[in-house]
Length: 171
Image 1: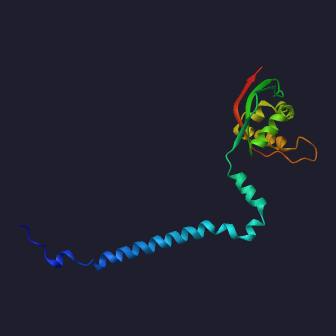
Image 2: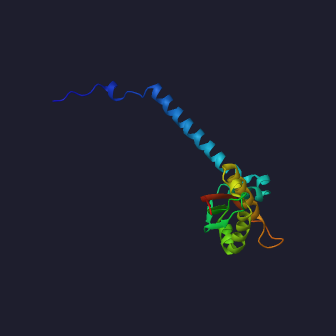
Image 3: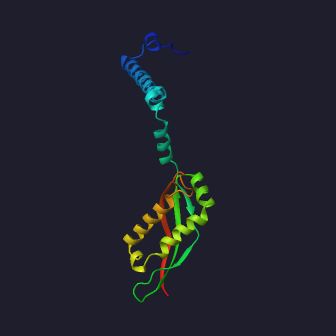
């Protein structure tokens, strides 16, 4: 026969330490939930922010993934450097603001190529051999490609010009 458990062991009240830990966990959970709700709903009711949609659009565009528009290979005769004549072969990729801009570049490819070819063929090999010369050329191409394709239209949103191939050879 089994002996019955003593009455005081079966009905032992929970300790004060365990109750304090439970209360602390509950307070932290409620505080964290309240803080989360506050920060999630804070921006929705701000009337000043809703009055400035253009800034929000610009920030959204700035954080959008870049879109690249590769151009076909350019091969041009460079301006003579004294007696030496050289040829440049380069491939360029443009970083544009979005797919709409990439489509605009593609739709106006003859104008894009013409602008770039005119810039490239006006250079001497000595001007574009150095890193600084290439950076200056990229800036000039960027400026030329930002100009609107149609008079009085918005400029293209081209962010960067990257050379993916750049070869100068004497002729």
